[in-house]
Image (cartoon, rainbow, N blue to C red; front, side, top):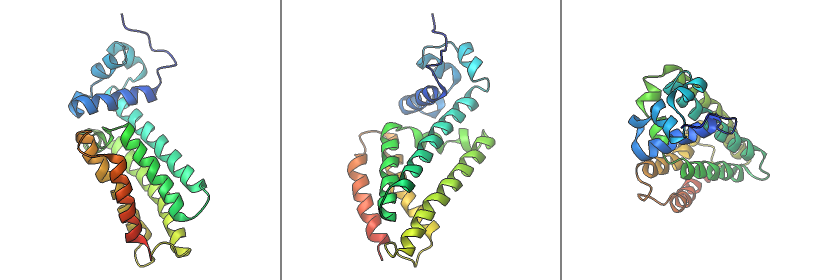
Length: 198
């Protein structure tokens, strides 16, 4: 008999179950029935809390991602020290998310988000623009302080910064043993520093 959903099974837990399912079986396995089974619920019990089915589950994954990114960037902004110290804090927190949620890139780049659910795509783009503005502001501060080169636009440096951990995320998402995220992240950070130093 399936357990009834209690307050301890929150949207975050459903999102994490969805990500684990995608990591094990791929995006095609992301159905309300499969997610319900993975958290010990019947599909009707899950639908009572996620009436939109798969779209609501995807929205809960975006909630989780937004919470993590907002927290990471907020912590980075409050970090004492230079802009590069703040960027490193943000970078490390993103790498830890990659290690924890290996399937995240598969889901975020899937047709399920970009084609099938346009309102979620718009939300993802809006969240990205907000986070880009915040990180680019840190980069601009570093440019003003003379620790980051000024001959490249801050938003372009942001894209390079993003690429430092997204490439790791994509490779790691396919097979956990293809790459050691921590070792590669350290190498990527060193290359990023060389690229942005004045």
